[in-house]
Amino acid sequence: MQEVRYMKKLTEKELAVYEWQLDVPGFGVEGQEKLKNSSVLISRCGGLGSVVAYELAAAGVGKLILAHGGNVVPSDLNRQLLMTDAGLGKSRINSVERRLKELNPRLEIVAIGENINENNVAELVSQADVVVDAAPLFEERFLMNREVVRQKKVLVDCAMYELEAQITTIIPGETPCLSCLYPEKPVAWKRKFPVFGAVSGTVACLGAMEAIKVLSGLGETLSGKLLTLDLRDMSFNELSINKNKKCSICS
Image 1 (spheres, rainbow, N blue to C red):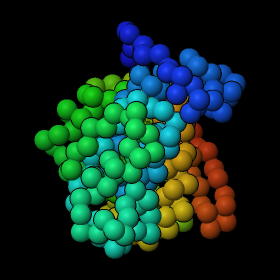
Image 2 (cartoon, helix red, strand yellow):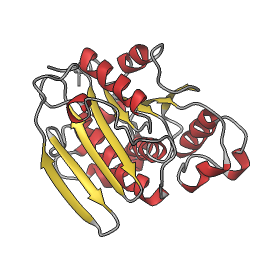
Image 3 (cartoon, helix red, strand yellow):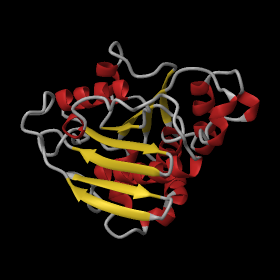
């Protein structure tokens, strides 16, 4: 991420709120101030993105740019944890903003009531230090990937299907991009797919932690690696991935 020229310091209230994570070795006040002065774009606040947003708000990231269209429907409620039964038929993004502000009123939110598309992707990515891709559609994921490579922004890409999930961190110029892994949209991919909220929530927490590590410099990220998990048998595997020399986006 780019260096912040004028770092906002932590207030007494913030020192109290984050005191338990300030004790994490290698993080401390310096890491917390980096989070406070950082911005993250999350594409979709559904089963994945809602938990990513909630964890980043709880951790003290200063600004979230959130893009999520449509109104709350009953089938959202098994996994989209920022939606409520009382909000059925009402704006999803309004529910997201309200729930996050209840948790962290210090949080700055840029709430966009539409999904990532050709018209907004460049502007939204430009506002962020890190992008977390939680979109279910490859069209949106490919748009995000193309734009982060162009703007040289870090992308944490999370995905899940049924009881399986995967995550990688893309650093333009250093690691493979999403199009290296998927040169084209998989033929079998469908908009509606089997999903438990606990599975999307699991990979979402990993994605939130990846963003925190990138922003604060804590630990090691999944750059150049693909973490896969299958919660049917609780198996986790980490694979090294290589750049595709013929990739149309990052080669």
